[in-house]
Image 1: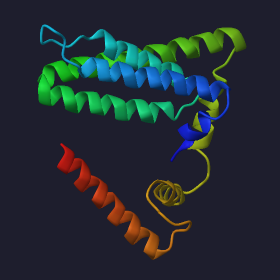
Image 2: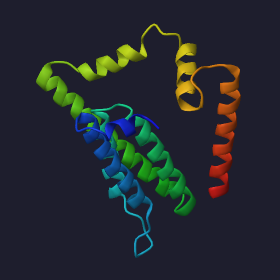
Image 3: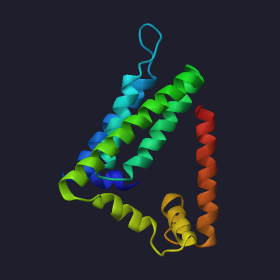
Length: 172
């Protein structure tokens, strides 16, 4: 129900980013899986971070997916292995993503003389659109089941979020 579905439809840089995000998902699953000796490995968390960082060089919303995957990793490991293991793996994953983004920026500056992709992002983030308008648009695309921001959309969207929260609580 998001841009990822569109990325899978055609071969372009978006689909390569989607493939990298898929690698990140598999690596996060591997990072929280128990080994035969009962331990968990740190290197899948690094692979996940590198994969999400690579995906973000093409599609920056991959950072949101990476954040959700990282939070999932933290919660699962904190519950099964403890806070120290969870924090260590989270730092490794974040470090992998940051290293990939830094390498991309350095390469872009070396090849083109500037960080054009970063400039495009900060230009959008610093645009003159009011924050309240951005928040309403964000809520509308995230939770509103209807096209529009009428009060019924807020009520039904809120009920959907509450239902989703209840479902997650029941599953956990």
